[in-house]
Image 1 (cartoon, rainbow, N blue to C red):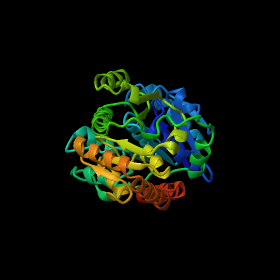
Image 2 (image 1 turned 45 degrees about the vertical axis):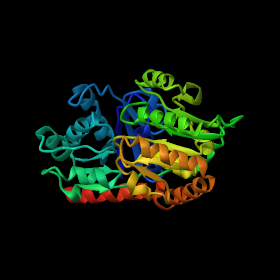
Image 3 (image 1 turned 45 degrees about the horizontal axis):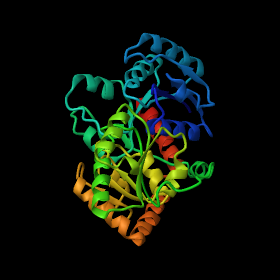
Amino acid sequence: MKFLFLNSAGIWGGNEKWTHMAATSLAKEHSVYLAYKNEVVGERYTIEKIKLPFRFSFDPVSIIPLISFIRKNKIDVLIPTKKRDYVIAGITARQCGIINIVRLGIVRKLGRNPYKNFVYNKLTHGIIVNAQVIKDVLLQSPFMSGEKIRVIYNGLDIDALESNSKSYSISAKPFPFLVSTVGRVSRRKGIDIILKIFSIFLKRTQSSDAGLMIIGTGDRLDEYKKLAHDLGISEKVIFTGYLDNPYPYLKLSDVYLTASQNEGISNSLLEALYFKNAVITTRAGGAGDIIEDRQSGMLLKNNDINAGVENLIELYSDEMLRTSLGVEAQKVVLDNFSLQRMTSEIIQFSKIIIERSK
């Protein structure tokens, strides 16, 4: 089969990591291509690719050359991975008589909205989601059918993770007890909640050896730096900005704390689990698909700051608990989130959709 991924992102984030891993893995046995907007995404690929403006959903300046590219390379399956790409992919797929399989990595309510019916139903042959809750919410819409949606969990390239984690050495662990989080510095990722949890934790424990590392960037970076200052914890918080390779720090981290408000299954969460972090996370999206509470991590309700503080204090005080959670966390990832399994399921689902559309 021949696959074309579409990704109009202007940053490199979790969705872009998934696209790169899926495309790279599929390319071992299939022909894979990329349509992209920004060099920050395109420069990471060695496969054949086309740069498009992706100005808006019905952009003819993107659609016309994309149709030509698809016909020239005899593409079988389109996989758009950003919301703005779904319509462009759907229109070009219809024009070329091929399959459009949307990848959706976040909970999204469709309701009875006619436009969403057009985008997610009429223009779409299949939908890949990475958590059962996303499928469940999609099926609340009267125009969605279960056979169109496939839950395919994210996969991790373990060899690449290990290699990257050793690619540079860190002279000293930033803090003896290191709490970390990775992701876009945004309200959806709950960075303000994380800062408040950590602030109360410091006041309760009077810890002199604990620190928080926030790895990532976003348009609220300055706002959250100010919040850390206002909470009186600036000296205990490191904002690294974007790191292309955060894995040496994740490998040193003791606790991974995330407070996402809406999520599918986060690649960064899976990576933290693999590196044996004791994880505290909200139940947002598919976290409950991965973690069994107090067996492979700790689960919170959204915005439950008090529970987050209690869990962090417990993990700080109990090294044996941290270790046991970390060991089980890595086992969960190795057993259920391999890149090979994810790739195989994408191929299988694509074949089913192609056969169904004949």
